[in-house]
Image 1 (cartoon, rainbow, N blue to C red):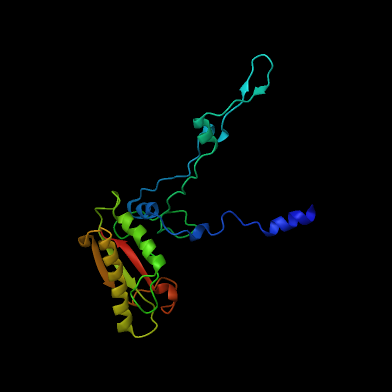
Image 2 (cartoon, rainbow, N blue to C red):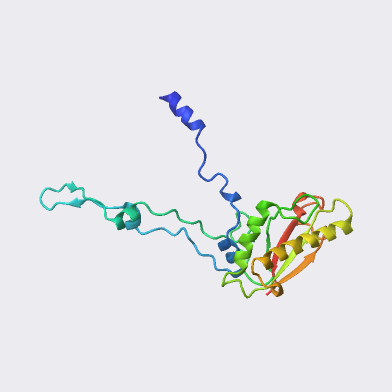
Length: 214
């Protein structure tokens, strides 16, 4: 038995593994830019989790089983709940969440093909999520600055041009998805605005950010 338990433990995987690596959702972007952060993980009523209860007879005091009704079956087997929306501008582990409003920014974490302004397939999928977010009622009247950034490796003029083209690529993608172009302003800053506490040569500086203007 001990050998069996050990073998099973070798194949166990923590349930939370990779949870922090989940890509942002529409709800996450809405939460960050509008402040409307719905909690999808609120505790359910006890009747939603216990399922059908046995009927107790008045004379004998023991339970008699009976077929569960469709409603009871649904309560006993609830559909998977979606995780709560979280503010993408909040640092990991932060107790205070930055207030939503003009100036709020998000690193969209989009990847491009090396040395080009072409979005990778994964980046296109994530850009589509961001596009849907901008069409949500909470965000559809807001304007955004799309910023392109690079690290300081290479010629500065080329980096500025690349950052501008990458930001423009995202803006064009959003416009094609239905976002009005007059809601988007594009800027390429090249290596001039590295992330705080990082050297200008760090790869993390290669990014596209969205900043709420109004």
